[in-house]
Image (cartoon, rainbow, N blue to C red):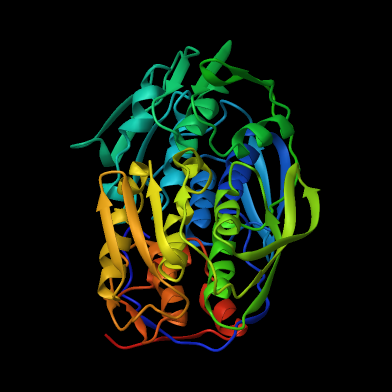
Length: 450
């Protein structure tokens, strides 16, 4: 996806009630990790429920380029024949990670302690995103990186020939940075230690344990201390990928703001490091319930039922919750626009360096549709207009960001006038069935001419 296709303009119209079951795709974060750790294991890992969005497909192609056997055997069913820790071959070509910041950063970590050189690139959006937050700690292992000004892609990583273990304190909450360091530590002798002051999504730690890595977790005055012992032989696994809570956020939030809606979203992963949005929505007064709570593949899972909630009120979202819902702030701000009073979102400067500057993208798009928004370097405040109060009628810009595009299409379903999105094409990176799924629930959205 380094060359983004022609724009796909879409328009969302005020809709009647949304009803039915929304079968959202597999979790993107877990899908990336399953492919990468499967490639680092010895033997065949079987994955079911893999997200087949472009981001994950790009990671699958990268693992093939490193010498792993990666085969699709059915809808969401994949087999990975791993080459073992330290077994990556040097690719014959540039690794194109498309739009995926998670993919490129985790793959950099996985190869950084192998004696190979790899050049990475991505699409126009990914090539603007900073990589130094990952390459700086990876350099401590002994690898080198050369990229564009500002530590941006395209970039070549020269893996360490004699890697050393590291002890690294993550300066800002980032599951990508933490995971990259842990993956690099797999091929370094001794123990690699990562310290995070604020807990971030822990899929990497859970999955490493499942593959047989020796991993320790301790809560200390410094924060969460995660230790991985290097040079294990990872054992192949059978992995069932839970459904993605970040994707579930869109049909759930649309149901909360579209009058008369009642939507069930089954099998959603409710890892506590990912469930901050749902906790926030319930604090706002959302009619959101968990049904059939269970555990699958080491991850907590439940069915979510969301019903129209006209009496939601704005709240102060705790900054400490940001890490557990960082990808959900765009759609939360859409819900906030349909609530009563102000919703304050603070401590979210990470949103400035996602696929787009998500604070700016959401603030400008909401203003274009009649919503009052104030914003600063690491915060923004949405003044809610109450149920059905958003005027709509504006043209919004996705900035090559899938979550921005989906958020504004959901806004249009509950606004007084249609909301246009200039390019919904990037949605395929994470939620390829978003459009038919939403239309199947009753949403009025369509592809439109420019």
